[in-house]
Amino acid sequence: MNVDKKLKNFYGFDHHSPSQITTPDDIWGYKYLYMTPEQRAKLKPNSKMVSGTVAGEAIGLMHADIIYKRDGKTKFIKRKNKKIYFKSAADSAVTALKKYEPQTLEDKESHIWNMKGFLLMLENLNQAVKACNLKDSIESEKFIEWEIPGCKYPLHMHLDLNDPTKLVEIKTRYRKRGRSVNSDGITNHSIQRCLPYPDHILQVILYYLATNLEPKLIVVNEEEFKIFDRDNSEYFTTQTIKKIFQQVQRTCIRRERLIDRHQGKETWVQDVNLDLKHFKWDDELKNEAEELWNQNL
Image (cartoon, rainbow, N blue to C red; front, side, top):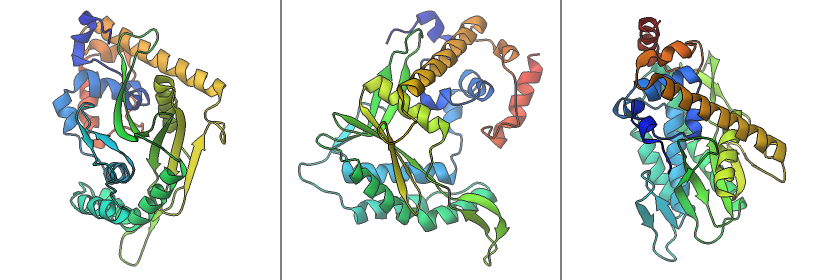
């Protein structure tokens, strides 16, 4: 990693990530230039996030030979020929989901629906991973650091699954909240189509650029799964890959210049437009964010 020492001290910022890149500048700045890592760690996830994480962990147990912890260093190596079957991994996943405590009524209702469809979705996901035909030395949550051409900070990533030739990214599509209410007094939630979001495409392309492993993107719900790769979709054409790379490079360079220009001061907000109507803003952060911008006009 070749990080400029002078830049590294500002705001405690030392790397980019796919989730940062797909976050609008104002939200990114608030979370990574204003909030501390400790404050970010206290942000509450929602049911969809937790359910997706738990599903990924279950799939790792079933299919991976090596499972890395999130620090990217510590790894759990399964004993040779030891197989963790679907029922065992699914039972552990359901137990973990039952421990989740929603913080809002909307999230509580979403969690009820997510729990209802979880095992169906997990079985579809299991079949999708089998269809990807991973072979030999399968890894889960492998840490990747990539030096982005033209940038001072590296890009940090974790792969859902990979073998020596392929990488697999998993996206779970849980039900979307509707308007009608069922007989139990719970808002109905409808099944979403298995199509990737632009954020998903960007993420997989970055993994491909950093590793040169053949990319496969699984999108799964409780009814079906779809696998997108360079052979069956237009998402990973040479032209699209080039366009995404240029977008990522522009975003990272722009943010590094912002950091260098303001050198640890809160005046960075003067160069970033605040859009509190964007759906990616957490409601709990909006009031303090607005105050931060108003104090640094």
